[in-house]
Amino acid sequence: RQGRRAEATAFLLPLYLSTSALYSFLSSFDMYQRSSPSQQQQQQYCGIGTSSPGQSIIFVSEDNVRPVVYNARSHLAILFKCNGSVWPKVLPYCLVNMTIMGVSEYLYQVQGVNLYFSQKGHGFMSVIVGFLVVSRVNVIVSRYMDMKTNLNNLFTTATMLLSTMAAVAQDQTEEGAIQWRQDVCYRTMIFVQSAVTFMRFRSTKQNVWDVPGLEAAERQFMVDNTYQPGAPAARYAHGRTQRLLTENARVTTRMLSRLLSALVENRSRLGTALATPTENKLLGYVDHLYVAYTNLMKVQLTPYPFPLIQMARTFLFFYVFTLPFALVGDSSGVIADICIVLILTYGFLGLEYVAIELDDPFGNDANDFDSMRMVKNFYQDVYLMINDVDGQHSATMLRERMSMSDSKSSTPTGVPEQAKLLDVCY
Image 1 (spheres, rainbow, N blue to C red):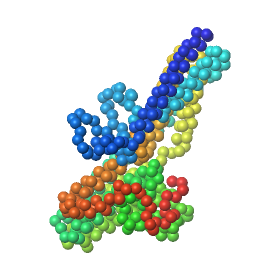
Image 2 (image 1 turned 90 degrees about the vertical axis):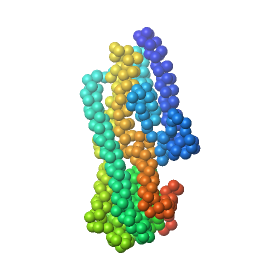
Image 3 (image 1 turned 90 degrees about the horizontal axis):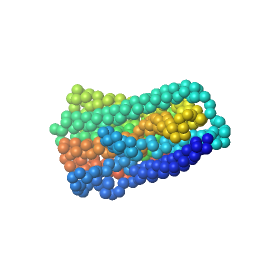
Image 4 (image 1 turned 45 degrees about the horizontal axis):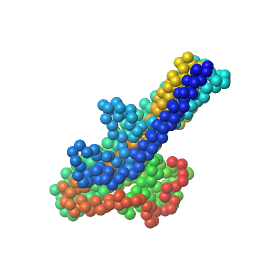
């Protein structure tokens, strides 16, 4: 017993100190990677200045978070990469569980206090926990990939809509046609921006009508189509105030009707109205836009069922933090028991944190979609397209209409106070 006591003391103290140091390093390194990039890094990302051959470019998202970029062929780089890893979140639980294991062994070997209980029940519970955790991860990863697919479909369809619109009407160069093409582009850009803002609502708490870059008429249209108290549409509300998340989804859908109206206006604003098949083709792209958006909206408004999360989390924490008591007095020794606790705690809680990380990929985390960068890339493609069809002056005017998108958001004059971000359950 004295020998095992010395073994436990000699192992636990350096192990605890080393894991604590590792946790401190991972935490500080994680905070460093989330900090705002330097001016030089931003210039490298934007392609400003020169870079020598072989110089690495530091990628920074629109939310000042470095996206996860890795080389799948480098095993060491994968194992020791901190950015986007769940290690900083899981390691504290590993430290706690290893401490419980060490204290349990100390009480058993030195004080004679036996906290052991049978491993049979623990073995059966491991099957249930594994099923619940792995099932949740599979569902979340599937949702994650579906959201990425639908997000790509949203941008691809919007690009095809505007490219087709510009191609079929490029021969009409009168002022009315130029303004019509610009209005269609503007309405499409605002719809895409609203759709992405709605998807980011849970993380940013920003309403689609508070997004900068909106003209007064567009912003007022959005506010008028909410059912919040004080808005004109509130007189039609059934029952209590709607959830703010639902209001943002409705307003984004209403912006699609504005786009439809702008497309149909070709009959009065063009010198020669578009042929019916051509117009139907453009309206068909709007249908595809709506399908992509509703698929995104479905995922956002239908979270993973809470009873399953609660049951999985209850079983998970009970299983993980009672694991040391099932290993007390095991013939493998203190070192082996602590290593087993470390690996199992990281494995089960790590999978749970993977599911948490990927559950809402429209936030500001390293593994989230860089959706705002995608929006601005879409804007820039539209400017180039308008420049090719209508010239630099029209492209500059469209850019100026969206110029506020680089400034901070503020609620405009005339927006009812009740239509601001309300303190309601979303």
